[in-house]
Amino acid sequence: MSKKERNTFLSLVKRDLKVVWHPCTQMKDHEKIPLIPIKKGKGIWLEDYDGNQYIDAISSWWVNIFGHSNPYINNQISKQLDNLEHVLLAGFTHEPAIDLAERLVKLSPPKIKKCFFTDNGSSAVDAAMKMSYHYWKNKGFKKKSKFISLSNSYHGETLGSLSVSNIDLYKKTYEELMIDTIVVESPDCYLKNEKHTDKQHTEIMFDKMLKTIENNHKEVCAVIIEPLVQCAGYMRMYHPIYLKLLREACDKYNIHLIADEIAVGFGRTGTMFAYEQSKITPDIICLSKGITGGYMTLSTILTTNNIYDAFYDEYTKLNAFLHSHSYTANPIACSAANASLDIFEKKQIITKNKILSEHISKSLKSIATHDNVGDVRQHGMIAAIEMVKDKSSKKPYPWEERRGLKAYEYGLKNNVLIRPLGNVIYFMPPYIIKEREIDKVINVIEGAIDIATK
Image (cartoon, rainbow, N blue to C red):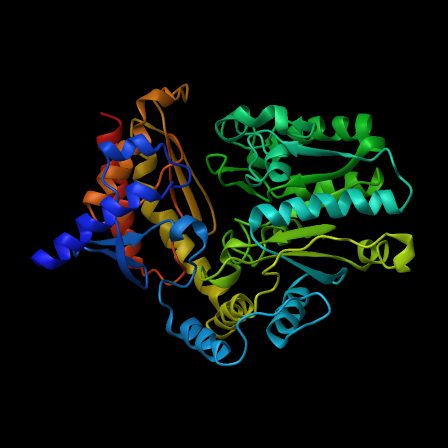
């Protein structure tokens, strides 16, 4: 690296730490852990001002599904910039939004007919909660004001989405600001009885949900759930049968089912949307993250005509759903999303992902035998490795030891960006990754586990 580039690197770090407050970060850590200014990205690679390159093994927080600086998405955004950068969506519309809404509805089950645009994942969940509550209010069910969610769930960090989340690290400090939520024990299969299959364990755990619904359905608007994988909840996973049973219970007891597909949608779990593996139709579907291929913030809520019709009335009835964001359905973001869907169609991404996920599964087999690995789990293009202090009992390392941080630092030294969740190292790469690059990442993860568990 030249002297000029080195000075730029040091200058950026100094300037950043003076004015920028980073997310999910104890800023004091950067007294010891170097901040890394990124100069550019191409494909699966990120490059810093030192000339170091890193495989983006976590898709930059699960959003960058087709690689950085994707030429096709770049081109579609460039075309849109020549026509329209933004216009309000109240009283106006534009073709990129219409195209995207039509395509998302077409990708959904037949009952899903409407697309409501929001701004980001958390705001999609907030709007979905408001929509469900307001629906029941318009229908005359004034007692329905609560939500059911799972333990270990994560739905975002705005006040509404945080209220239905259940991870103390994010929520505990703000509990006094939260709305009251009914929490049911998660069906995740990590600590299941070894005598049971994942399906059997999941069915057993559903009894807890069923009893909760039976006892509280008159005051519950909806159950909100992350289909198949609780991503920020340490990548814990469960069997698709849970969603099928939940759909049946929600139908029986007149409760909405909200599917938070923000992290697991757009091909992550092996199907376009995770709920598809249970052959169900949610009442409300929240989408974000990979929707634009990692380019722009955008989210949507997909729902049924039944819910839409409950708000369709004379203005004087004051039944309209008054929820908005200034950048609702931004044309540039919608163009990026449409380009992303083009790639899914033209490149047969879901089919190719199945081949890649099989290769990931084979590559992970050696890690499963590690003395300090309690579990290796996978759903499609999401793989997770749980580091434990004791393999037989799955006793975890104390969180204060920050084993995951040691793994993160090892990864960077070996040109792979991994960002563990506590003691869990996960692998959620862009879909353009090649098998040899998967092998590189798995090899580095194995080394990171060796270092982190010493």
